[in-house]
Length: 125
Image (cartoon, rainbow, N blue to C red; front, side, top):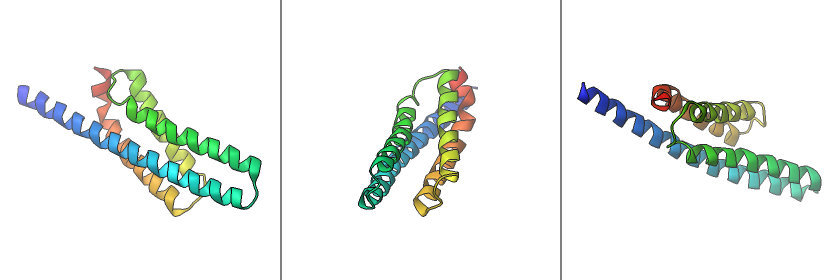
């Protein structure tokens, strides 16, 4: 019985570590994509729209950073916040530009979501 709990706890901790790494990689990817697309828009003299796009890229990136920071906390709200942030990011990447970096971001989000879904009992306890 104790070995099963210990194994479950170790599995949960490794899933949390993998999810954190994926969140940080995705955060960095969103910052790089945002800088690239805003630079291209400024180069084309799209001043106001490039500021708005930059703001939305920053919101998306920092929501991933926020999710990575609250991973260690427990509670149902934390779990559903993590699922919501990841699901919303998948939704936004699939309905945004269909460029290669966005597909990579969606795959990273899907892997993060696959790591988070089995952790429901960990966050409920």
